[in-house]
Amino acid sequence: ELVETDFGKVPLEKVLDTGRFDFEKAEQHPLWFKELNGFRDHVPETEEYGIRSFVYRERRPFDPMKLKEFINRSWPGVIRAKGFFWLATRPHHVGEISQAGALIRTGKRGLWWASVPKHKWPDHPEWKAAIKPYLDPIWGDRRQEIVFIGCDPLNEADIRAQLDSCLVSETDFMPGRWRDLADPFPSWERDAATS
Image (cartoon, rainbow, N blue to C red):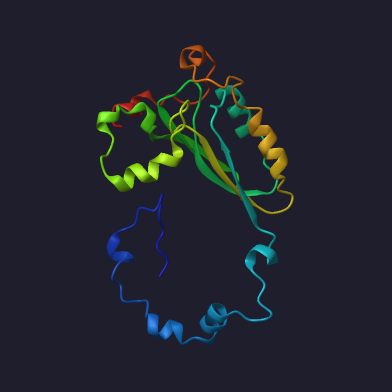
């Protein structure tokens, strides 16, 4: 059965406890055994189709106009990209980017923890341990983190250079200085009240 979804929204009864998957039957299939135990002629999909990926990470914010220009260019070889970003003009909000084929979508994901008063942070030791590697003394948890997945002619060095050129030059957190940068992205303020 094929279940059509938009953004993963599907009636749970269509996918949970359906009784359609039989683990014991599946693990007896010869291809299951070959895949689990490896076989001499197996070619991983990454090699067979030349699929590769990389993650772009940076702490400084993007200049909104420069990022918009990057988004409007073609990205040869990129099949899928997704992740989050921050714009210099929007220091409190996490931006989300999702690209599949010719479709690129951006929007507000939520707030950076650095924008939330510390007395409202979770007090769980597991949460504190999980967030600690992401907290920078200057930027807090604000960062660019976008994965690019593709095949030839994907040019990682070129995409990294293009994104680097979208970053503000300052290495200190200066939201007042960036407030007046041109920002062509739709407003996220209407959504801010529901964050």
